[in-house]
Structure formats: structure tokens, C-alpha cells
Length: 439
Image (cartoon, rainbow, N blue to C red; front, side, top):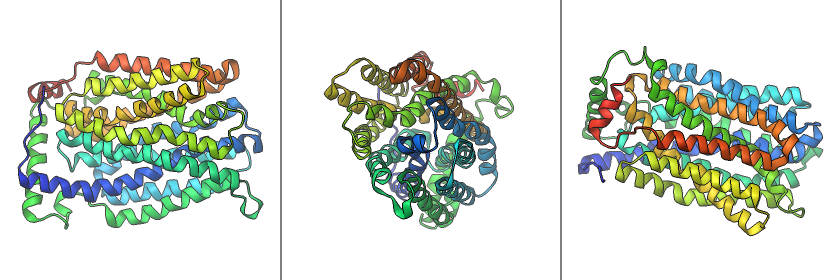
């Protein structure tokens, strides 16, 4: 059933301007966010041997990021809600850029754990902060499309950075330092520079947007106010009752399980692909890693736009998660290289296409007064998933090899899929309002 809402020409023009000015720059920021978070997976191809890091150690290194990432998300979004967004987001970017570049100097597992912990502190507020920031600029009916385009940076980043990262660690040996060290330096410095640019490029509220006309500001402010007013009237004291809301925790569970699988894939997949063929060089591993993300880059915006057009979120979220799990099941059970490559393509499609429809749900089902904290709570559960999965995978890989890592991720995807397809998700405005009242 199509529930799309007709938007006047003024609205179409306004939203087009906002997407171009806000989302395009946010896209660039998220591009480097993914690069700086996931480069440890490529670095591990050399770093683990240089620093004498075992499979269990690497599981702990991968998991450490999520410890601080979990604890600092809610405080970060609370600060964002009370301060100027451009300054806080700029601080976040400068911090994680400096920490990433400083990883160049680590000499042992302990120092690596410290760098990953610090990286988690700074990165914690970025993604939930941007989702909340978008809610200040876009009606909820636009959020799947906007979020899908924003997160397209993740798949594009992985597609572009994967072969580059593989090349850097194999060929860059400036001043006799290993390639994995230069990987952190080369990919961290641009982020710190982008942090400085953020102060000047991001606009805090529609009223501050000099690039919008007076009538465009009025239309957007009125549209956002009407939507928020309708949700606020549906209930009261939602912020005080946020942690007792079952809808919030269902969303957190869905995201936590699938992100546990996705985060494990991000860190362990380069090593798994290395085992596809004994002749694969590090550069070739990077090239193969680009395949799933190129597929995701094509399909994710189309899937998010279709979800917005039909106003259907449940199966637009669930089916990609199921595809993700099935792809990993094939990787675990099939030995054929062409089939493995096809499964990698489906993994890319599945692991990214659910993002847009899923992140449209909090704005649809939860109160605006609690949204900043709610988004941070949901995203922090991805940290729990990432920590638990990577820590457990260190032992799973020791006992069962990479097949065990893949099968464990399949189980996580299946749990997430079942949680989302059995969730009573609103597909019309009346039910959305009713859902909000459950806070």
C-alpha cells in the first residue's frame, strides 16, 4: 500500500537544498568514519605478526573499541542536544583523526588496546549524533532515503578504501616503517582536517541556514513543528520513561544483533578472504573486499527510496538482514571460489540495505523529546554487539577456525531477522501516533 505524501513545490525545492548542503557533507564525514574504524582489519594482515598478536588478542583489540563506544554515546548525544552541533561534531572528528594517526606509533598489544579505546570515545557520538541531527532537518517520511544516502558513504568508503588499504600495507615502506603503520597515519590525518572544516560547513538549525530563503525556512520549520507536535500530543513524560519502553528495546535488540555480525565481518573478513586462495596478495584481498561494497553502493539508495515510497519498514529492514546471514552461511559451507564471490556480493547488499528503513523507525515510533537519547541507546547496543561478537570470535576462531566465525554471525542475523519481522511496526500515520503513545 502506498502511503507517500504529496509535497508542494516549495517543499520539494527546500528539501533538495537541505539534502545537497547537509547530507552531502555528512556523506564525506561518514566516508572517513568508516575508513578510520575498519582499517584495523587490514592492518592485522601484517600488524598481528609484527606485534605478536594472537587470534584471541586480536578479538580483544577489535572488541575494545566498542567498550568506550558503548559508554560514551548517550552522554555525547546529550551534549549535542544542548550545544551547537557543528562545534561538537567538529571536536569528535578532530579527536578520532588524531587518535587514528597516533596509532602509527604503537609498539605492543597494550598500546593498541589504548588507541582503540580512545578511538571509541571520540567516534561514539558521531553516528547517533548525525541521525539526531538529520531529525532536526527532515520529516520522518524522508528519513529512510536520507539515511540510506548518508550510509551509502559506508559502502562507498569500503569499496574505495579496501584496495587502497591493501596497497598501502603491502607497498608503503617510507623511512623503513611497516605499511600497516602508514595506513593509520595516511587515513587519520584527513579526518582531523575535516573536523576543522565542519565548523564552517554544517548549519545548526533551519533558522540559521543562510542558504535557504525566508519562505523555505518558514516551510521547513512549520513542517517539522507539525510533525513533532503530533507526536508530543500522543503521550507525556516520554524522556523520563524512555528506559522502560519495550519498543525502544526491541529496536535496540534488532540493531545490536545484526551489528554484532556486521562489526565482526568488518574486522575478520580481510583475513577470511585471504584464505580464499593461497595466492592472494594483500593488495588483491583489498580488491576482492571492494566487491560487496560496490554492490551495496548501487542497491542501498534504491532500497531506501522504495521503503519511503511504500512507507513499509518491517520487511525492508528484515529481508536484507536475512540475505546477509544466508551469504555468510554460503561462505562457511561452500568451497567454490566463484560461489564465494557471489556470496560476498550478497553480503554487501544485505549488510547495508537494511540501514535506511531501520533508521526511519525511531523517528516514526519514538517521541521527539526522547529521540536523541533513544538513538544513542539503540546505537550503543551495536557497541555491545560489536564488543561481544569480536571478543567471542577470538575464541571461536581458535577452536573452530574462520568457519566458526561465519556461522556465529549467521545465528546473530537470524535472531535479528526474527525480532524485526515479528515487530508490530506502523505503516500509516494513525498507527504511528498510537505507537508513539506507548512511551
